[in-house]
Amino acid sequence: MCEVNAYLIKNGEETLIMERVYKLDLQENQVHIENLFGEQKFLSASLKEINFEKNRMVLEKTGEKS
Image (cartoon, rainbow, N blue to C red; front, side):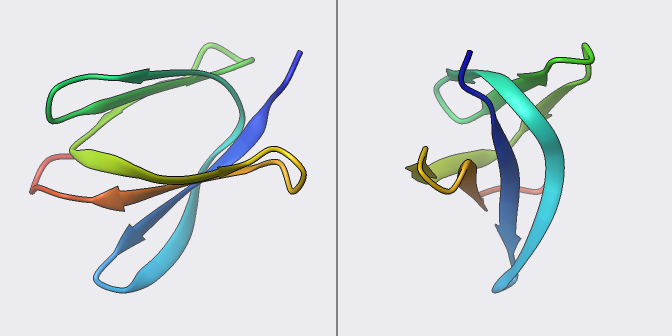
């Protein structure tokens, strides 16, 4: 199973928001992520990068909700 850590860029700053993410669902204006522990987040963000070699995913904030 492939899992990555999710980072969010907001106001130019990158922050770790969830570890061991295994599921990513891109919706119209929202991203849904879920990790191995059952934690879920729905974010107003867009996918900027996934790097499986470095086990990281970078999302960029697009709206007010998170």
